[in-house]
Image (cartoon, rainbow, N blue to C red; front, top):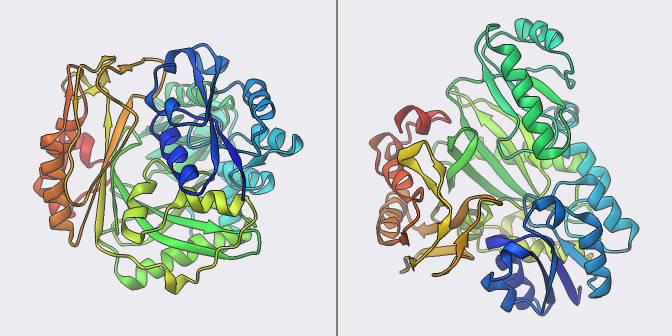
Length: 445
Protein backbone atom coordinates (compact mmCIF):
# COMPACT_ATOMS: atom_id res chain seq x y z
CA UNK A 1 0.00 0.00 0.00
CA UNK A 2 1.14 3.54 -0.71
CA UNK A 3 2.36 5.69 2.17
CA UNK A 4 1.66 9.09 0.54
CA UNK A 5 -0.66 10.16 -2.31
CA UNK A 6 -0.87 13.51 -4.09
CA UNK A 7 -4.37 14.61 -5.10
CA UNK A 8 -4.29 16.44 -8.44
CA UNK A 9 -7.70 18.04 -8.10
CA UNK A 10 -9.81 20.42 -6.04
CA UNK A 11 -13.22 20.82 -4.43
CA UNK A 12 -15.41 18.03 -3.15
CA UNK A 13 -13.52 15.23 -4.94
CA UNK A 14 -10.24 16.34 -3.34
CA UNK A 15 -11.89 16.18 0.08
CA UNK A 16 -13.44 12.81 -0.77
CA UNK A 17 -10.03 11.35 -1.68
CA UNK A 18 -8.34 12.81 1.41
CA UNK A 19 -10.88 11.07 3.63
CA UNK A 20 -10.47 7.73 1.87
CA UNK A 21 -6.66 7.96 2.13
CA UNK A 22 -6.72 8.76 5.83
CA UNK A 23 -9.01 5.81 6.53
CA UNK A 24 -6.46 3.61 4.76
CA UNK A 25 -3.61 5.11 6.81
CA UNK A 26 -2.14 7.01 3.85
CA UNK A 27 -0.72 10.54 4.06
CA UNK A 28 -2.02 13.09 1.56
CA UNK A 29 -0.63 16.02 -0.40
CA UNK A 30 -3.21 18.55 -1.58
CA UNK A 31 -2.33 20.94 -4.39
CA UNK A 32 -4.18 24.20 -4.78
CA UNK A 33 -4.35 27.36 -6.86
CA UNK A 34 -4.16 30.85 -5.40
CA UNK A 35 -7.95 31.07 -5.77
CA UNK A 36 -8.37 28.01 -3.53
CA UNK A 37 -5.98 29.04 -0.75
CA UNK A 38 -8.84 29.16 1.78
CA UNK A 39 -10.30 25.76 0.88
CA UNK A 40 -11.28 23.95 4.08
CA UNK A 41 -9.91 20.57 3.00
CA UNK A 42 -6.37 21.94 2.79
CA UNK A 43 -6.28 21.83 6.59
CA UNK A 44 -7.18 18.13 6.51
CA UNK A 45 -4.38 17.18 4.12
CA UNK A 46 -1.01 16.29 5.63
CA UNK A 47 0.67 18.72 3.23
CA UNK A 48 -0.70 21.47 0.99
CA UNK A 49 1.26 23.05 -1.85
CA UNK A 50 0.27 26.03 -4.00
CA UNK A 51 0.91 25.24 -7.67
CA UNK A 52 -0.03 28.49 -9.37
CA UNK A 53 -2.64 31.17 -10.05
CA UNK A 54 -6.37 30.64 -10.47
CA UNK A 55 -6.22 29.90 -14.20
CA UNK A 56 -6.44 26.12 -14.68
CA UNK A 57 -3.69 26.05 -17.29
CA UNK A 58 -1.31 27.51 -14.72
CA UNK A 59 -2.35 25.26 -11.85
CA UNK A 60 -4.60 22.19 -12.03
CA UNK A 61 -3.70 21.49 -15.67
CA UNK A 62 -0.01 22.33 -15.26
CA UNK A 63 1.61 18.90 -15.50
CA UNK A 64 5.23 19.96 -14.74
CA UNK A 65 4.16 21.71 -11.53
CA UNK A 66 2.08 18.75 -10.35
CA UNK A 67 4.83 16.24 -11.09
CA UNK A 68 7.43 18.48 -9.39
CA UNK A 69 5.21 18.74 -6.32
CA UNK A 70 4.87 14.96 -6.17
CA UNK A 71 8.63 14.57 -6.38
CA UNK A 72 9.53 17.14 -3.72
CA UNK A 73 6.91 15.78 -1.29
CA UNK A 74 7.91 12.14 -1.94
CA UNK A 75 4.39 11.17 -3.03
CA UNK A 76 4.37 7.66 -4.44
CA UNK A 77 1.11 8.02 -6.35
CA UNK A 78 -1.21 10.63 -7.83
CA UNK A 79 -5.00 10.44 -7.74
CA UNK A 80 -6.46 12.66 -10.50
CA UNK A 81 -10.11 12.55 -9.34
CA UNK A 82 -12.44 13.49 -12.21
CA UNK A 83 -12.07 16.29 -14.74
CA UNK A 84 -8.80 18.22 -15.19
CA UNK A 85 -6.08 15.59 -15.89
CA UNK A 86 -8.09 12.48 -15.00
CA UNK A 87 -8.32 11.26 -18.62
CA UNK A 88 -5.18 12.92 -19.95
CA UNK A 89 -3.08 10.20 -21.59
CA UNK A 90 0.05 12.36 -21.66
CA UNK A 91 -0.22 12.95 -17.91
CA UNK A 92 -0.59 9.23 -17.23
CA UNK A 93 2.49 8.55 -19.40
CA UNK A 94 4.56 11.16 -17.58
CA UNK A 95 3.55 9.72 -14.20
CA UNK A 96 4.66 6.28 -15.38
CA UNK A 97 7.95 7.60 -16.80
CA UNK A 98 8.69 9.41 -13.53
CA UNK A 99 8.04 6.30 -11.44
CA UNK A 100 4.88 7.75 -9.87
CA UNK A 101 1.83 5.49 -9.75
CA UNK A 102 -1.17 6.89 -11.61
CA UNK A 103 -4.36 5.91 -9.78
CA UNK A 104 -6.25 5.01 -12.90
CA UNK A 105 -5.95 2.64 -15.86
CA UNK A 106 -2.79 1.68 -17.77
CA UNK A 107 -1.90 4.08 -20.57
CA UNK A 108 -2.72 1.48 -23.23
CA UNK A 109 -6.23 0.89 -21.85
CA UNK A 110 -6.80 4.61 -21.53
CA UNK A 111 -5.84 5.06 -25.18
CA UNK A 112 -8.28 2.36 -26.23
CA UNK A 113 -11.26 3.53 -24.21
CA UNK A 114 -10.49 7.23 -23.77
CA UNK A 115 -10.86 7.86 -27.49
CA UNK A 116 -14.57 7.46 -28.20
CA UNK A 117 -14.03 6.26 -31.78
CA UNK A 118 -11.53 3.58 -30.73
CA UNK A 119 -13.86 2.55 -27.90
CA UNK A 120 -16.67 1.98 -30.41
CA UNK A 121 -14.39 -0.26 -32.48
CA UNK A 122 -13.46 -2.21 -29.38
CA UNK A 123 -17.13 -2.62 -28.45
CA UNK A 124 -17.87 -4.03 -31.91
CA UNK A 125 -15.03 -6.56 -31.49
CA UNK A 126 -16.56 -7.57 -28.15
CA UNK A 127 -19.93 -8.07 -29.90
CA UNK A 128 -21.58 -5.20 -28.02
CA UNK A 129 -24.28 -3.18 -29.86
CA UNK A 130 -23.21 0.37 -30.71
CA UNK A 131 -25.20 3.35 -31.97
CA UNK A 132 -24.83 3.63 -35.79
CA UNK A 133 -22.23 6.26 -36.60
CA UNK A 134 -19.27 7.44 -38.67
CA UNK A 135 -16.87 4.81 -37.35
CA UNK A 136 -13.98 7.29 -37.59
CA UNK A 137 -13.33 10.91 -36.69
CA UNK A 138 -14.58 13.36 -39.33
CA UNK A 139 -12.42 16.35 -40.24
CA UNK A 140 -14.35 18.08 -43.02
CA UNK A 141 -17.85 19.52 -42.78
CA UNK A 142 -18.70 18.28 -46.29
CA UNK A 143 -17.71 14.74 -45.39
CA UNK A 144 -19.75 14.93 -42.19
CA UNK A 145 -22.86 16.04 -44.10
CA UNK A 146 -22.55 13.03 -46.45
CA UNK A 147 -22.26 10.66 -43.48
CA UNK A 148 -25.25 12.29 -41.78
CA UNK A 149 -27.29 11.70 -44.94
CA UNK A 150 -26.41 8.00 -44.87
CA UNK A 151 -27.08 7.60 -41.14
CA UNK A 152 -30.28 9.63 -41.30
CA UNK A 153 -31.23 12.67 -39.24
CA UNK A 154 -31.25 13.51 -36.41
CA UNK A 155 -27.54 12.95 -35.70
CA UNK A 156 -25.29 13.96 -32.82
CA UNK A 157 -21.81 15.38 -33.31
CA UNK A 158 -19.53 14.29 -30.45
CA UNK A 159 -15.98 15.04 -29.31
CA UNK A 160 -13.68 12.04 -29.79
CA UNK A 161 -11.69 12.93 -26.66
CA UNK A 162 -13.11 13.65 -23.22
CA UNK A 163 -16.74 13.70 -22.15
CA UNK A 164 -18.97 15.45 -19.64
CA UNK A 165 -21.32 16.71 -22.36
CA UNK A 166 -18.71 19.02 -23.90
CA UNK A 167 -18.20 19.11 -27.67
CA UNK A 168 -21.68 17.74 -28.44
CA UNK A 169 -24.36 19.08 -30.78
CA UNK A 170 -27.62 17.53 -32.00
CA UNK A 171 -28.43 18.33 -35.64
CA UNK A 172 -31.81 17.76 -37.29
CA UNK A 173 -31.09 18.83 -40.89
CA UNK A 174 -28.50 20.21 -43.31
CA UNK A 175 -29.49 23.82 -42.70
CA UNK A 176 -27.64 24.28 -39.39
CA UNK A 177 -25.12 21.45 -39.79
CA UNK A 178 -22.11 23.66 -40.53
CA UNK A 179 -22.47 25.91 -37.50
CA UNK A 180 -23.10 22.92 -35.21
CA UNK A 181 -20.11 21.01 -36.61
CA UNK A 182 -17.76 23.95 -36.12
CA UNK A 183 -19.13 24.72 -32.65
CA UNK A 184 -18.66 21.11 -31.49
CA UNK A 185 -15.08 21.02 -32.82
CA UNK A 186 -14.22 24.36 -31.21
CA UNK A 187 -15.68 23.30 -27.87
CA UNK A 188 -13.79 19.98 -28.04
CA UNK A 189 -10.55 21.86 -28.74
CA UNK A 190 -11.12 24.21 -25.81
CA UNK A 191 -12.11 21.48 -23.34
CA UNK A 192 -9.77 18.65 -24.33
CA UNK A 193 -7.10 20.14 -26.57
CA UNK A 194 -8.37 17.98 -29.44
CA UNK A 195 -10.91 19.21 -32.03
CA UNK A 196 -11.63 15.69 -33.38
CA UNK A 197 -15.33 14.82 -33.64
CA UNK A 198 -17.40 11.91 -34.92
CA UNK A 199 -21.06 11.33 -35.76
CA UNK A 200 -23.70 9.06 -34.25
CA UNK A 201 -27.36 8.52 -34.96
CA UNK A 202 -29.32 10.46 -32.37
CA UNK A 203 -31.56 8.00 -30.52
CA UNK A 204 -34.87 9.72 -29.81
CA UNK A 205 -36.27 9.45 -26.29
CA UNK A 206 -33.63 7.16 -24.69
CA UNK A 207 -32.61 6.57 -21.11
CA UNK A 208 -28.93 6.94 -20.19
CA UNK A 209 -27.66 3.95 -18.19
CA UNK A 210 -24.10 3.35 -17.00
CA UNK A 211 -22.42 0.34 -15.37
CA UNK A 212 -19.76 0.76 -12.67
CA UNK A 213 -16.85 -1.64 -13.08
CA UNK A 214 -13.65 -2.41 -11.17
CA UNK A 215 -10.80 -4.54 -12.55
CA UNK A 216 -7.41 -5.51 -11.11
CA UNK A 217 -4.07 -6.37 -12.71
CA UNK A 218 -4.70 -10.11 -12.26
CA UNK A 219 -7.61 -10.11 -14.70
CA UNK A 220 -10.42 -9.98 -12.15
CA UNK A 221 -13.28 -7.74 -13.25
CA UNK A 222 -16.52 -7.13 -11.37
CA UNK A 223 -19.52 -4.88 -11.88
CA UNK A 224 -21.13 -2.86 -9.10
CA UNK A 225 -24.48 -2.60 -10.85
CA UNK A 226 -25.85 0.31 -12.84
CA UNK A 227 -26.83 3.94 -12.45
CA UNK A 228 -29.63 5.69 -14.32
CA UNK A 229 -28.39 9.12 -15.46
CA UNK A 230 -31.35 10.04 -17.64
CA UNK A 231 -32.10 13.43 -16.05
CA UNK A 232 -29.81 15.78 -17.97
CA UNK A 233 -29.59 19.31 -19.24
CA UNK A 234 -27.50 19.98 -22.34
CA UNK A 235 -25.92 16.54 -21.97
CA UNK A 236 -24.86 17.39 -18.40
CA UNK A 237 -26.16 15.00 -15.75
CA UNK A 238 -28.34 16.55 -13.06
CA UNK A 239 -29.88 13.64 -11.14
CA UNK A 240 -28.72 10.02 -10.95
CA UNK A 241 -30.17 6.95 -9.28
CA UNK A 242 -29.52 3.27 -8.73
CA UNK A 243 -30.90 0.83 -9.64
CA UNK A 244 -32.38 1.80 -12.99
CA UNK A 245 -36.13 1.58 -12.27
CA UNK A 246 -37.07 0.15 -15.69
CA UNK A 247 -34.60 -2.75 -15.92
CA UNK A 248 -35.60 -6.28 -14.96
CA UNK A 249 -32.99 -8.75 -13.69
CA UNK A 250 -32.40 -10.36 -17.08
CA UNK A 251 -31.82 -6.99 -18.78
CA UNK A 252 -29.59 -5.91 -15.90
CA UNK A 253 -27.42 -9.02 -16.27
CA UNK A 254 -27.09 -8.52 -20.04
CA UNK A 255 -26.05 -4.90 -19.59
CA UNK A 256 -23.50 -5.75 -16.89
CA UNK A 257 -22.12 -8.63 -18.96
CA UNK A 258 -21.61 -6.31 -21.94
CA UNK A 259 -19.73 -3.81 -19.74
CA UNK A 260 -17.44 -6.54 -18.38
CA UNK A 261 -16.73 -7.89 -21.87
CA UNK A 262 -15.60 -4.45 -22.97
CA UNK A 263 -13.36 -4.01 -19.92
CA UNK A 264 -11.74 -7.41 -20.40
CA UNK A 265 -11.25 -6.79 -24.13
CA UNK A 266 -9.37 -3.58 -23.26
CA UNK A 267 -7.27 -5.34 -20.57
CA UNK A 268 -8.46 -2.58 -18.29
CA UNK A 269 -7.31 -2.05 -14.70
CA UNK A 270 -8.92 0.17 -11.99
CA UNK A 271 -12.34 1.90 -11.99
CA UNK A 272 -14.33 2.53 -15.15
CA UNK A 273 -17.85 3.41 -16.15
CA UNK A 274 -19.35 1.91 -19.29
CA UNK A 275 -22.20 4.02 -20.66
CA UNK A 276 -25.20 2.92 -22.72
CA UNK A 277 -28.37 4.34 -24.22
CA UNK A 278 -31.55 2.36 -23.64
CA UNK A 279 -34.16 2.96 -26.36
CA UNK A 280 -37.93 2.83 -26.03
CA UNK A 281 -37.92 -0.89 -26.85
CA UNK A 282 -35.44 -1.59 -24.01
CA UNK A 283 -32.63 -2.29 -26.48
CA UNK A 284 -29.27 -0.99 -25.31
CA UNK A 285 -26.37 0.56 -27.26
CA UNK A 286 -22.83 1.25 -26.07
CA UNK A 287 -21.86 4.92 -26.37
CA UNK A 288 -18.62 5.42 -24.41
CA UNK A 289 -16.47 4.44 -21.45
CA UNK A 290 -15.11 6.80 -18.81
CA UNK A 291 -11.64 5.86 -17.60
CA UNK A 292 -11.92 7.53 -14.19
CA UNK A 293 -14.09 7.79 -11.13
CA UNK A 294 -17.42 9.48 -11.89
CA UNK A 295 -19.03 12.46 -10.16
CA UNK A 296 -21.98 10.20 -9.34
CA UNK A 297 -19.98 7.37 -7.76
CA UNK A 298 -21.63 7.91 -4.30
CA UNK A 299 -24.88 6.48 -5.71
CA UNK A 300 -23.14 3.14 -6.24
CA UNK A 301 -21.40 3.32 -2.86
CA UNK A 302 -24.72 3.79 -1.06
CA UNK A 303 -26.44 0.80 -2.66
CA UNK A 304 -23.46 -1.60 -2.56
CA UNK A 305 -21.66 -0.51 0.61
CA UNK A 306 -18.29 -0.42 -1.20
CA UNK A 307 -15.94 2.58 -1.11
CA UNK A 308 -14.89 2.98 -4.75
CA UNK A 309 -12.07 5.44 -4.02
CA UNK A 310 -10.48 2.98 -1.60
CA UNK A 311 -10.77 0.24 -4.23
CA UNK A 312 -9.08 2.52 -6.78
CA UNK A 313 -6.16 3.02 -4.40
CA UNK A 314 -5.88 -0.66 -3.47
CA UNK A 315 -5.89 -1.75 -7.11
CA UNK A 316 -3.31 0.88 -8.12
CA UNK A 317 -1.02 -0.36 -5.35
CA UNK A 318 -1.16 -3.87 -6.86
CA UNK A 319 -3.73 -5.49 -4.59
CA UNK A 320 -6.21 -8.00 -5.97
CA UNK A 321 -9.97 -7.63 -5.66
CA UNK A 322 -10.69 -10.34 -3.13
CA UNK A 323 -14.37 -10.49 -3.97
CA UNK A 324 -16.58 -12.54 -6.22
CA UNK A 325 -19.58 -11.14 -8.11
CA UNK A 326 -21.84 -12.87 -5.57
CA UNK A 327 -20.26 -10.78 -2.80
CA UNK A 328 -21.53 -7.54 -4.32
CA UNK A 329 -25.08 -7.00 -3.13
CA UNK A 330 -27.45 -4.25 -4.17
CA UNK A 331 -29.65 -2.90 -1.38
CA UNK A 332 -32.37 -0.29 -1.61
CA UNK A 333 -32.45 2.80 -3.83
CA UNK A 334 -30.06 5.76 -3.95
CA UNK A 335 -30.63 9.11 -5.67
CA UNK A 336 -28.12 11.93 -6.17
CA UNK A 337 -28.83 15.57 -7.02
CA UNK A 338 -25.98 17.78 -8.19
CA UNK A 339 -26.24 21.27 -6.74
CA UNK A 340 -24.62 23.96 -8.88
CA UNK A 341 -24.16 27.68 -8.42
CA UNK A 342 -26.51 28.50 -11.29
CA UNK A 343 -29.77 30.40 -11.58
CA UNK A 344 -32.54 28.16 -12.99
CA UNK A 345 -34.81 31.18 -13.50
CA UNK A 346 -32.18 32.89 -15.67
CA UNK A 347 -31.36 30.06 -18.10
CA UNK A 348 -28.99 28.52 -15.54
CA UNK A 349 -26.62 31.49 -15.68
CA UNK A 350 -23.57 31.18 -13.37
CA UNK A 351 -24.15 32.57 -9.88
CA UNK A 352 -20.74 33.12 -8.29
CA UNK A 353 -20.17 34.95 -5.04
CA UNK A 354 -19.62 34.56 -1.33
CA UNK A 355 -21.77 32.07 0.59
CA UNK A 356 -22.90 33.91 3.69
CA UNK A 357 -25.37 31.28 4.90
CA UNK A 358 -24.86 27.53 4.50
CA UNK A 359 -27.04 25.00 6.32
CA UNK A 360 -26.84 21.49 4.82
CA UNK A 361 -29.55 18.89 5.46
CA UNK A 362 -29.06 15.72 7.47
CA UNK A 363 -30.98 12.83 8.94
CA UNK A 364 -31.18 9.11 8.28
CA UNK A 365 -30.22 8.17 4.74
CA UNK A 366 -28.81 11.57 3.73
CA UNK A 367 -25.21 12.11 2.58
CA UNK A 368 -23.69 15.46 1.56
CA UNK A 369 -20.46 15.53 -0.45
CA UNK A 370 -19.22 19.13 -0.44
CA UNK A 371 -16.20 21.33 0.22
CA UNK A 372 -18.28 24.49 0.65
CA UNK A 373 -18.65 26.29 3.98
CA UNK A 374 -20.18 29.52 5.26
CA UNK A 375 -17.84 32.26 4.04
CA UNK A 376 -16.53 30.35 1.00
CA UNK A 377 -16.53 32.25 -2.30
CA UNK A 378 -17.72 30.45 -5.45
CA UNK A 379 -15.30 31.29 -8.26
CA UNK A 380 -16.06 31.71 -11.95
CA UNK A 381 -12.77 29.98 -12.73
CA UNK A 382 -13.98 26.46 -12.03
CA UNK A 383 -16.94 24.13 -12.40
CA UNK A 384 -20.01 25.54 -10.67
CA UNK A 385 -20.87 22.42 -8.66
CA UNK A 386 -21.27 23.25 -4.97
CA UNK A 387 -22.13 19.84 -3.64
CA UNK A 388 -23.96 16.56 -4.16
CA UNK A 389 -26.96 15.49 -2.12
CA UNK A 390 -27.29 11.71 -1.96
CA UNK A 391 -30.10 9.80 -0.28
CA UNK A 392 -30.53 6.07 0.34
CA UNK A 393 -33.75 4.34 1.33
CA UNK A 394 -35.45 0.95 0.98
CA UNK A 395 -37.69 1.93 -1.93
CA UNK A 396 -37.66 4.50 -4.73
CA UNK A 397 -40.75 6.21 -3.32
CA UNK A 398 -39.07 6.59 0.07
CA UNK A 399 -35.86 7.85 -1.56
CA UNK A 400 -37.79 10.50 -3.49
CA UNK A 401 -39.56 11.62 -0.30
CA UNK A 402 -36.27 11.88 1.58
CA UNK A 403 -34.66 13.82 -1.27
CA UNK A 404 -37.55 16.29 -1.32
CA UNK A 405 -37.17 16.81 2.41
CA UNK A 406 -33.37 17.20 2.17
CA UNK A 407 -33.53 19.72 -0.68
CA UNK A 408 -36.24 21.70 1.13
CA UNK A 409 -34.01 21.93 4.22
CA UNK A 410 -30.88 22.98 2.33
CA UNK A 411 -29.99 26.67 2.76
CA UNK A 412 -27.32 28.25 0.53
CA UNK A 413 -27.48 32.05 0.41
CA UNK A 414 -27.36 34.56 -1.19
CA UNK A 415 -26.23 32.92 -4.44
CA UNK A 416 -28.69 31.18 -6.74
CA UNK A 417 -28.48 27.38 -6.98
CA UNK A 418 -30.10 24.49 -8.83
CA UNK A 419 -31.86 23.26 -5.69
CA UNK A 420 -35.29 24.55 -6.90
CA UNK A 421 -34.78 22.89 -10.31
CA UNK A 422 -33.90 19.54 -8.74
CA UNK A 423 -36.86 19.81 -6.38
CA UNK A 424 -39.21 20.58 -9.29
CA UNK A 425 -37.93 17.61 -11.30
CA UNK A 426 -38.21 14.96 -8.57
CA UNK A 427 -41.66 16.31 -7.65
CA UNK A 428 -42.94 15.93 -11.23
CA UNK A 429 -45.45 13.12 -11.74
CA UNK A 430 -43.62 11.86 -14.85
CA UNK A 431 -40.43 11.45 -12.82
CA UNK A 432 -42.12 9.57 -10.01
CA UNK A 433 -43.85 7.31 -12.58
CA UNK A 434 -40.53 6.61 -14.45
CA UNK A 435 -41.84 8.14 -17.68
CA UNK A 436 -38.69 10.06 -18.51
CA UNK A 437 -35.97 10.22 -21.15
CA UNK A 438 -32.82 12.33 -21.64
CA UNK A 439 -34.87 15.25 -22.98
CA UNK A 440 -37.31 15.30 -20.06
CA UNK A 441 -35.69 18.13 -18.06
CA UNK A 442 -35.29 20.47 -21.02
CA UNK A 443 -38.83 19.86 -22.30
CA UNK A 444 -40.49 20.44 -18.98
CA UNK A 445 -38.28 22.98 -17.23
